[in-house]
Amino acid sequence: MSTVAVALLITLLAGLATGLGGLVAVSGRRGSPAFLAIALAFSAGAMLYVSFAEIMPKAIDALGGGTGSRGLAVASAGFFAGIAAVALLDRLLARMQARGRARAAREEGSARNRLLRMGILIGLVVALHNFPEGLATFLVLIEQPEVGLAIAVAIAIHNIPEGIAVAAPIHEATGSRARAVGASLVAGLAEPVGALAGYAVLGPVLGDAVFGFVFAGVAGVMVFISIHELLPAAREHGRPLLATNGAVAGMFVMAASLVLLQA
Image (cartoon, rainbow, N blue to C red; front, side, top):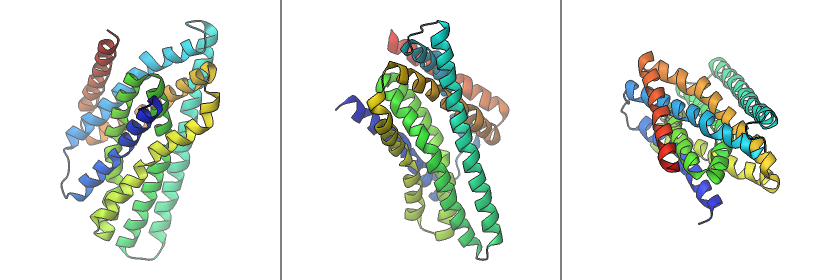
């Protein structure tokens, strides 16, 4: 199996973790808030550590700058470009979601119809959000498989509550477990679609300079997702200390895994 095929398969599995969230949503059982808080914070800690300790140094090296000013400057530009891109996407999706909620509240129809529209909207939001995540995971897997695998696991963990968010309102509205879980799986498929689409565009020009800039952008995407989504969600689901401990644990495990893999 080629490196690209393995990277695509792992990206697919990470995306399909939304289906696990869908299964949780239709099982009739609620998970432990403390466990969810620790899991989300753990993912954030792992992604933050790998972004600064592994991905950014690799990006600087790929740009031919080593620790020099040029490599650092270009990598920094890529880093903040990644943050800007995902922040813009997040803002657009938040506006879409807000408008959808307002429209659902104004339109006539039963509560179940409104729930169904809301579930579909959340599924669209999650799918669009997963698109750049899939590309980021895929590119890291190709160049640094051990790092990419750790990132894929972190992405998979935080995809589970996203799957719950998609499936819960659809299940409540339709009573169909299959439709609810199916919707969460479709939203997760945006991960490998994003990987394939991005690779199709960047593949022909993916030299050292392009790779270094894109790799730095991947780090920016990971940092933004961790700070903007994972850590706040972890604090909402549990006590602040749980989120802190979970994040530190994620950093420690990521650091230990990188040390062991490079030994």
